[in-house]
Every structure is written in C-alpha cells, then in structure tokens.
Image (tube, rainbow, N blue to C red; front, top):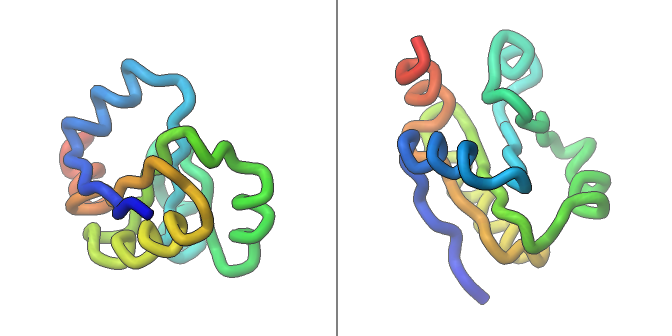
Length: 102
C-alpha cells in the first residue's frame, strides 16, 4: 500500500492544466466550502463519503483539501486505505490556495 503525497499550490495548478481526470475533495465545514472552494471540488463529509467512494475513479489522481493542509493528511491516508491509488494532500490547504489566487 502506498502513502499519500504532498502537493504544492504550484503543482496543483500544473496538474489542473495538464490532466482532465483530477478529483478534488474539500473536507472543510459546509459554511467554509459554501464561502469558497477550488473550482470543481466536491465537498466531502461523513455523510457523503461512502457515496463518493462508490462513484469515484480509484485510479485517477485525488487531491484532498482542508484549511491549512493538516487534516487533509489524515483524510488522504484514509482514502488510500479505501483503495485510491494516487492521493495527494494540498500543502497549505485552501488558505494557501486562496492567497495564491487573491
């Protein structure tokens, strides 16, 4: 079993430009997600995670986003345990993403 990989904001920007099959999940609370999120991101919660896993492409790159890049590491590990092959934790989280796109 592999481990998740760390992903910088710049690496994510390049991946978005080069790959059409990226899956981005945002694990922040609903209000924060509603206030702003990375385009195309899915809001992943305890309530919808089983449905997400059932419908997701286990082989496509999966990027996990949280507030600052800490909680996403645990979620990324969990998603690898569920069978995803190519999982990333976004370093700096949505805070860094929004600063880079301000």
